[in-house]
Image (cartoon, rainbow, N blue to C red; front, side, top):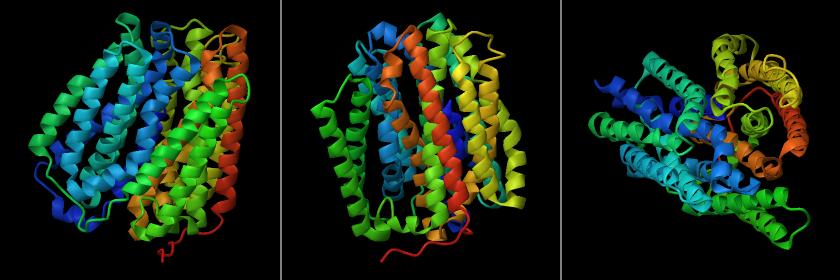
Length: 482
């Protein structure tokens, strides 16, 4: 379900394409380009939200442990998070249509691997391959979208794409739950095949092969260090959360991950503005605040919204369809309120909304501790989901414009891409830390889930505090790296 919220972060990538590039690339087939981008992106949005509902069925079918179920989710999120920026850079150099079509093909092939997986290890391998495909198709579909429209038409196109992505992420759990109940969990991966075939055919026929005006040097060293560091940290957190005591191998993995990430920061400093994550971005206090808010808030939501359908199915006896429907108020409330909140942010500035919104989310997380206990859906689950949705509507509406305003024009593309990656990183860390919850049953499951909900509330409060403190300074351009 957080895939619905990721559209808010992702759409900034399209908006950050230089306007002169858009003016040069407007084509008579622009509406077909928009349809292609929607089809391609929906692969990632549908699949990311559907799998959460399928975790109980997957665990039972493949005899998966809690750590194994964590990897079903994070196997996809890890390469997408680590390689999102380099995926966009590859398109700038080798052609965005080429990378888009390659990403669609890889994602579709990976979906077949997932659907036919005879064991958990094969399923996780397929999910990793899906994440790799998504890291290629997502940034390039958005860059193509931004380069195919100009002026007001670009705003309408990006808005249409975001609405379609939110709808796909909202319908995904409901459709996926219905398929799981009717056919089985393998059916959720077959959804991608007709969409992928259609997206490939449309891309080949209608999408022009655009590239960046200047050819950036690829930061392959940075991408490898980021991927290696995040993999080690994710594995270490997953193992630590499912272990009964201290283990040397877990400490070694976490230490190696932190070391690789430190090397990543050093390597990025050496590359200056050619880095996939220019450190000059972090000389802007507002950008630091927005980055912390994104990481903490999406971490809280990423973990909680994986656990809620799992608890509803395992502890409350919901069917997969019912669990998918239980979360439907989240995207509906956000869709209804976002436009109004966006206009309010234009008048009052983003600081107040970005500070208050996470606090409302925190209150919703505390209400979510009642999920799985006695009481009907209307008295336990719905109030928590509705309050979380209201808080997210406060926060997500001004987030995109605030990110773009917090950096100089030369950094808007990488800043928006980094913000999107941070949103996924937050969920990655949260899910890696809750293997024990996914392995528990009965009273232990509810106790651990409620502890996780308290942690989610704490992360949301920290997100609001970081926005309040660091957005005091009016957004201004960062200084270029020397």
